[in-house]
Length: 172
Image (cartoon, rainbow, N blue to C red; front, top):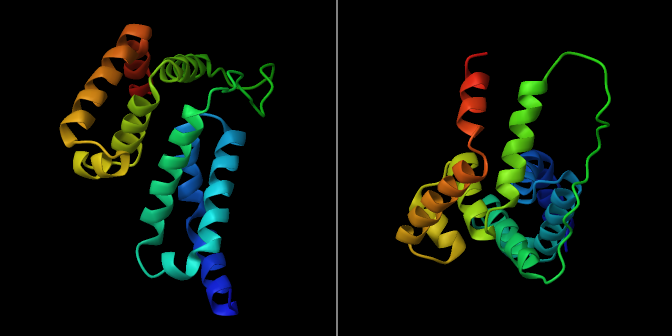
């Protein structure tokens, strides 16, 4: 790789890695797994950066994140432990409602099928239209809509208090 290509890759990563990490975190639900996912995708992109940089590199990397995460989901052994960098016993403001909301949402999201979770991340976090989501996940837009509807129904079923907790949070 020549110096200009390496410099271009470094500049891109410095500018866009935060946004890409946010997507990886939403897909994995765990900071360390998100770091691993992003690092894996960036390492692969680095090898092909000469070709990738001339198109839409961020779109390419986002698609790579989604596909790599799906391949990780398909692996037979997945960790079920929740890794956290925060200790639960810290003094400070009472954020119990917010913690309850985050825990309920995380537990509910963990119960979703991988494709349903990916659809919700792409639709609500990334704000992508159904057509783009369908293209990324290699399915039809109707499948995206049905997966989103099923995912939201499952979230409501697994966490009936979620609507109540969200409305409380919105009133703050």
